[in-house]
Image (tube, one colour):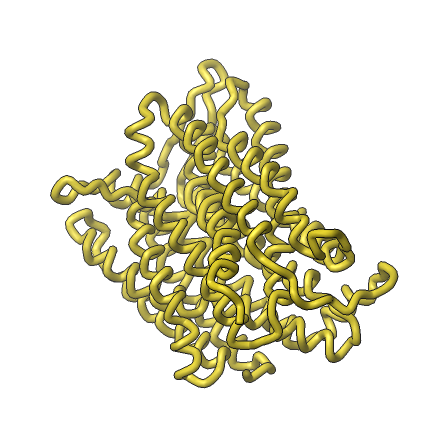
Amino acid sequence: MVKLREKIGYALGDAAAGGITWKVMSIAFPLFFTNVFGLTIADTATLMLIARMFDVVTDPVMGSLADRTQSRWGTYRPWIIFGAIPLGLIFALLLYTPEFGPTGKRIWAYSLYLLMMVAYTAVNVPYSSLLGVMTDDDYEKNQFSSFRMVGAYAMGFITLLSFPYLQRMIGGSEQHQYAVLGAVFGVIATAGTLACGLLTKERLKPVRAEKFTMKPFADLFRNKPWVYLTLIGICMNFFNGFRYAVAGYMFEYCLHGDVTVNGLIINYTLFMTFGELTCMIFGGVSPIFTKKIGSKRKAFMWAAVICVLTSILFFFVPMDPAYIWVLVGVVILTSIGIGLYSPLLWSMYADVADYATKKNGTSSTGLIFSSGTMSQKFGTAISGSLVALLLGIAGFVSGSDPVTGQTVVTITDPEGVNNMIWSLFSLIPAAIAVIMIVLLYFYPIKK
């Protein structure tokens, strides 16, 4: 029986990575880059696209490298322990705006964003793979996965809830606020990652391939469950990515800024916090829900149906601050579905890893779990890139003044931009969730 302390330790890993670094990168970075840092909308879209293509290479390589690591700390834990400080440091630097011209800012943003992806990969791929060697009990795997999601959503809740209030507490320019918050959250992310590496244990020994070959990579594409689950993971992160990336723009332009209700300041981070809290609660409920439904696949499908229906409902709510609580209510309903299916993805990757080991005779756990983190980053950043691209097409123009260095934003078609923003938060994610349901229907592992 695995002790509660270890499950909490495992949860701290995704509290740091998913609840702080990735949450801020998903929800705040698109708006930060265009409206605070001073990148053009085109540069922002290109940056996120390049970073994701970069991850297509680095994630599988990292997974294969982690599978072959042997040390006194185990196979996957040393990457978590020694990657903690670089992860927090680079994250902090990425939220700092240097006093450079447009070209210097572009170089700074591109260089640090790519470094951040390397650091995130070096920590998160081994962290995800750790699930496959901590226990061979399927229910315990579901428990670890559930703790992971609760940790991520709980810290995401704290991060997003505190963000607007910390900004006001810090004061000064928005650039100064983001720089200080980057340093604070970077330290917390480092501490959580380090605690995860130190508190967890590797009980199972991977069946290692003696030499590095390309065979494990080729085997992936012959692994039918892996193909379907990776496509499902990409869709899942597209769904989340569009909503997170466009939330800041939705408040800035559709709702005309922060909404104050009885002294409560509701900005885009706090708005999404309601969803984080719901995801945290229903992430904990997910193992019970799955057991009642009878299989992970069916539970995932029902959760995705909730996301489809509530996303469509959101589109028909008026674009008016007076309806803020209706909007919050619909976001909470959507987050029930997200909370229920989020832990299932990682538990299903463990099933795929077990399937691959039985089929091929050697373990490729790190490589298989790397595709989970790859789909996470691919889906989130491609959606962020598409948000920037589609907003640009709709009439959103941003950049830095070449003389003053100040950020300049121009809206050439306000109605077109607003409609695009609203659709990116509702109808487009709904269509992606429908595709996810179809893929789940054909997913071959029925357990």
